[in-house]
Each structure stands twice: as structure tokens, then as C-alpha cells.
Amino acid sequence: MIARRMGIASGLLALAACNQGTPVDMANPPHTRAGAWVETGTLHGQTRAPFTFCDPGRPIFPAKDASCSQWQAVRLGDGSLDFNAVCTDGAATIHLHRRIVGDLASGFTDDITSTMDAPNEPKNALTAHSVLRFQGPCQPGMKPITPAAG
Image (cartoon, rainbow, N blue to C red; front, side):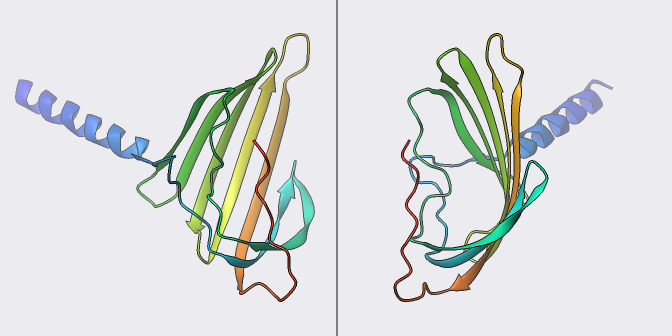
């Protein structure tokens, strides 16, 4: 009976470890493929117009902001990326969760949920769903996007 319980406990621990994923090296995160991409999706459930942009092949996660106490990503068993951050802005605390599914070289989805808690203010939440598809080389004269400053 003890051996059986030890086996079950060992199996559960292994399963828990699988669910947590493999940590992503945040100093060298995965990059998108350089070229033209089209993005469609929703913001707060409202459809956004398609947006085409020239991507230089940037890191999928920006550099950690100094205001963040948590900034980590894991690659799950299915290949998806799961990112979590906790940051502060004055008295407000921001919780960010991203789930990226697919191939950063050809097409992927990016789901974002962000909540902000601040004293004496209602909880503020943001949800976004983006579908990104690689289109090929950037067209002549197409300016590359630049990552937002942290």
C-alpha cells in the first residue's frame, strides 16, 4: 500500500511539473520572424480592423520593466507560451497574463488579460485576442514597427 501511494504521489508530482512548463530564458526570448505580418483580433470583445506591419524580428516578450516583481514565461508541453507579470504603477498593481499559441515564424494567436487594482478605483480589466499571420517579405518603403519603450 505504501509503495502504491508513493507511486501515485510521484506521478502527481511529475504531472504538476509538466503543467508548469519549461522556463523561457527571458534574457533571450523567442523572436517573431522578420517580414510582413497581418494582425486581426478583438479588444474587449470588439473586432479590430486588420493591421499590416513590417516586423524586424523582435522578441515576443519585451525586456523586464523595473517596476515588475514578477516577469516570467514558460513553454508548455503543447509548445504554447504562457507569460505572467506583476508590476506596480504608483499605488496600482497590474497583473498581466499572455498565452501565445502557434508558430512565431508563420502564424500564432496572442491572448492577453490584464487587470489593474488601485486604491479607491474600480478594478480595471483589459482583454485582447490577436491572430497574426506571416505574409512574406516587407514591401519596399514599408517602415518596420519599433517596440514600445519600457
